[in-house]
Image (tube, rainbow, N blue to C red; front, top):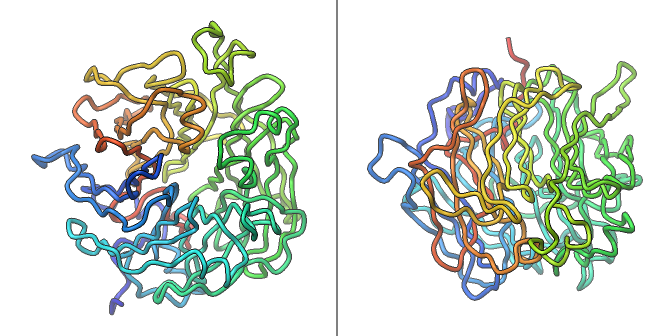
Amino acid sequence: MNLRPDPTFYPSPRMAMEAPAETLAFTLMLSPDGAQPDGLAVVDVDPKSPTFGQIVHQVIMPNTGDEFHHFGWNACSSSLSPLSGHAFLERRYLIIPGIRSSRIYVIDVKEPLKAKIHKIIEPEEVFDKTGYSRPHTIHCGPEGIYVSTLGGGGEDGTDGPPGIFIMDCETFEILGRYEMDRGAQDKHYDFWWNLPRDYMVSSEWGLPPQFENGIVAEDLLANKYGHSIHFWNLRARKNVQTIDLGANHQMALEIRPAHDPAKDYGFCGVVVDTTNLQGAIFTWWQKEDGTFDAKKVLTIDPRPEDPANLPPLLQGFGAVPPLVTDIDLSLDDKYLYVACWGLGEMHQYDVTDPMKPALAGKVELGGIARGAAHPNGKPFVYGPQMVEISRDGKRVYWTNSLYSTWDDQFYPGEDGGQMVMAHVGENGGLTLDPDFYVEFPKGYRSHQIRLEGGDCSTDSFCYPNT
C-alpha cells in the first residue's frame, strides 16, 4: 500500500488524458484447443524502443483449458472516490479469469518484465462462495473488485442466473454476490457505472450452453440470446429498471458510459439484428426523473457475398454480417470505436452528439471472405475484435480472437493471433501503423489488451471535467 494515491489514478478523465504515454501493454494469449496453458504477454508499445512491437515477457499459467477472455486491474481511478476507502492502493495486479475453467489468476505486474503469478483462486472457491461460474469481466470499483459471470451453478451453468460477485482488492478473497434484488436480470455479460450518479448498467450475452460449443443457430434465429440492458442502484445493489432493446437485437454486449461523470449517457453494442443481419449501437441516457431510456442510433449493414465463399453457418444468408463484438469510447467522449469482427473493419464514429454518431474513419483488416492484409503485407486472421484506446486518444490497439469455438465457426480453417495499432488523425480518421504488428507464438490466439498505467476500458472517474 502507498502512503499517497497511486500516480496513475486520476480524478477526472481530462487529467488522465494528460498522463504520460503508455510504453507497455498486457495482452492475453489463448490456447484454443487447450493443448498448452493460456498466458499473458507483455508487449513493448514504445516507438522509441528497439523492441517496439515485440513480446518482451510472458507469464504462462500452470493449468490448461482456462480460456482467457477478459481481464482487468485490481485498482483504478475509482479508488479516489470518497466512498471507496481504498485511495492508497497500487494499480499493481491484473485479475485474469478463465471463462471455461472458472479459475482466476492474480498476476503481479509491479515489475512488468518480471511479471509473475501472485495467487490462484480455484473454481471450487468461486462456486462455493458465489454460486456463479464462468467469470468474465473485471472492474475495479468502490467496494473492491467486481467480477461479472456468464454462468450460474451446476455443471452446465444453468442452475440459477449468473451475476456479479465482489473480491477484496487487497487480499483477493471472494466476499460474495453483489445483487440484493436482480429483478428481471437472468443473463449477464458486461457492466459499468457512473460513480457520482450512483448507478450501474449491465448487459446480456447468453448462458453457457449457448456459447461454449459455438453459437447455437436455432437459438439465435429464435431470438433466445440476451437483448436487454439493466440499470441498478449501485450502492443498494438493486435492479431499478430493465430496457428490452427488442428480441431481434441479439446479444447486447459491451457497455460504455461517458467517461465524464457529469454526462448522463452511454452506449451499448448489439452483435446482430436477426431481421436484417445489421449490427447496431444503442445510446442510453438518464432522464430528469431518474429513470432511463434507450434508442438505436446507428446501424451497420451486412455485405452481400457469394455463398460459396462463406462458412456453412452463413451460406444460407448470402451475406457477411458486421458482428459488432466490441466497442470502446475515447476518454474525451468524442470517438466511439466499433469492431466489426465479421466484416473485418474497425469503425471510428464521432459521437460528440451521442444521438447522431457520424463515421469519421475506417480500417479494413481481416474479415470473412475478405482477408484484408496488414499494410506490412502480413495476414490478420479473423477480424478486429478487442479494442483498447490510449489515454490521450491518439492510438487504438486491437486483437483478433472472439471466443475459440466461435472463431472456428465463422473462420473455419484459420488460426493465429495478432495485435495491431492505428494512429488517430488530429481531426479523426484511422491509419494503421505499418511497423506495429505483433505475431503471437504458434498455437496461441490474442484476446484482450490492458495498457500500462490504465486505459479507457478500466478506469471509472469520480469527478467531472473542469
